[in-house]
Length: 85
Image (cartoon, rainbow, N blue to C red; front, top):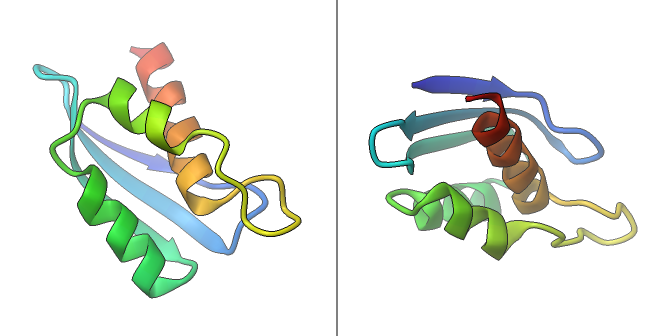
């Protein structure tokens, strides 16, 4: 199922996340805005991984003085998706 998340406190503007609900895995992530190389890299690295694995890997990663980052916001989005199901 496809979800849309609006990140907070980072340069990216939107995250489009496709989850395979049957296997609880990330099928696809597109991060709109932000640093293109980093956001594309993160997206490719998480595809095919379990939600819990991605959350554990990315949660709490900071970006400079912001206290959050695009990877951290992706983890937060995945937690929200997981808790809403």
